[in-house]
Image (tube, rainbow, N blue to C red):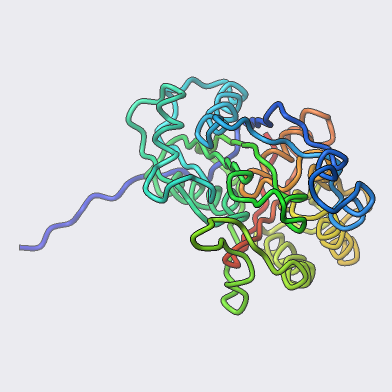
Amino acid sequence: MSVTLNTATGRQGSKVVGLGHYRPERVVSNDELAKTIDTNDEWIRTRVGIAERHFAAPDETVEQMGAKAGEQAIADAGLRPSDIDTVMVATCTLPAQIRQASTKVASLLGIVSPGSFDINAACAGFCYGLANANSLIRSGEAGTVLLVGAEKLTDWVDPTDRANAIIFADGAGAAVITGSDTAEVGPVVWGSEIEHTETIGTTVPERKIYQEGQTVFRWATTKIPQLALDAVAKSGVQLSDIDVLVPHQANLRIVDAIARRLRAEGAREDLRVADDIVTTGNTSSASVPIALDRMRKAGTARSGDLVLAVGFGAGLTYAGQVFRCP
């Protein structure tokens, strides 16, 4: 006997309607790091562009930081926790593999019985999550999604490792995505680079981050500008239409290289480029939403702007898309 299954009915498109972020209270300067490792302020600024970063308290968790960012995003959207039916958390720094951050974040926010799952695409996690939220809403499987990027990288960094201790930090960013009669989140361009899978990882059993910095830098400065161009083309807009560029905040030199390539290819000279790494550090999957929300609060990103976001990192994974700023 043949039967026909029902299919969900979705929306024509999706849109980002709220943003929020959280940075821990403790601010760590380059001079403070120089007291315990062989480095100095000039060396750090020259190589990665960072002046200071935020470290979470020892008892502060990924989920707690994610909930604080999520609370802001829900309020910014003019919604209540009960309006959220799906929660996604992008993270690669949970202390245990079997532990779902998304369910805990939902509980902390009072969101009852949502669909919830975590995404681990490392520093590309937020962009991967936005692509999933867009697809779920358009397919009808979700109505309103809370997407959180949250990381406590200080749990995974050897504080005596000069190459990594100067870069990584803690924090969370969040977005609320809901249905729209028009597409305000463009299609994703994503992929992975199997050749360089082992260039970023964690040691066993020490559970500390390692990376081949020069290899990653060369890959990011050559591969990611083309990813950004492809994402713009796939969205159906012109490069000159893009108002705001928000790359993953891995290294200020990488950010600058991406911006230079885009301007050479036709982006406007007044393209506003996120440089949040200077005062926030590298927060992996949290870096894109933190940077965009801070730009918006500073007035350098405005409601209605076309945003080009690109994420890239361990895996090596990468993803990018164009969306309208809430």
